[in-house]
Image (cartoon, rainbow, N blue to C red):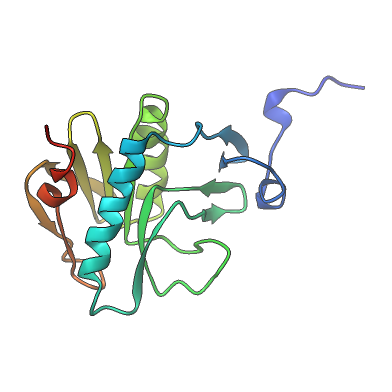
Length: 182
């Protein structure tokens, strides 16, 4: 009888959906999520959702959601902070790449958001990826050009129009960060 090694363990969505607590799966590897995000993190996510939802008032094919499972494959399930998804019909989890994903970074998730999720979202053709840095009140915004993300800039007080989204929405970072400025 051999010794079970960590690299021999490979989880799938069927395992994932039975677990208690908050998890993500990266190529079959279970990753525990941090305890509930800090108030500032939650408040920023709410501001982003509110601002995008206002932009969607005339676009009924898309919706903005927070903390929803995105099933990339049977062994990769992620839970972005905010997504804009269009034409999704599955009620349990997202089955196709959202148009916009927002991750609000913390010290414990920085590498995951800046490296692992960045690569997965790029490979899955998420059109726009935004990484929010709450301590700096700054957002790095990436747009998928062909097969690679192209950095559109650092945003703090500027607006950005997502021209390639189904609804052609804009996000005003001045509004998003306003309540957090001293």
